[in-house]
Image (cartoon, rainbow, N blue to C red; front, side, top):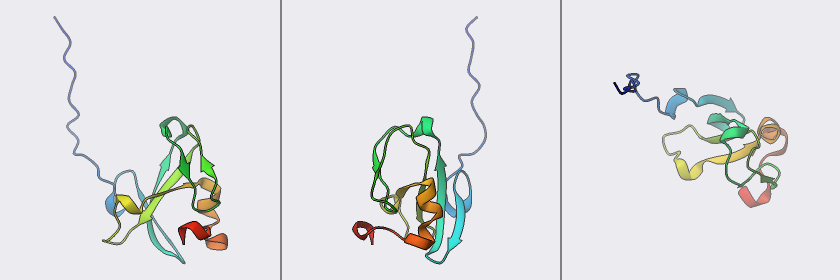
Length: 97
């Protein structure tokens, strides 16, 4: 007899409002929704707004976007972990400000 995969009956968890995989962080630059990306999940190249260097596939990093109601997927930015932590001291590079 063939095996039947059980369906996950938990409701989908969204990313908004600090619920699900995203957490809310507050700083001098406002409130942000932040999600950690494991190196195994990082499959594309991104440009970090903190240092303007490339984030290569396989590098753990964070994705952050404004927590206000106007924040959208177009506002998401991928940051190196250290650059995200130091953003209050450095801020984004010229290209992103």
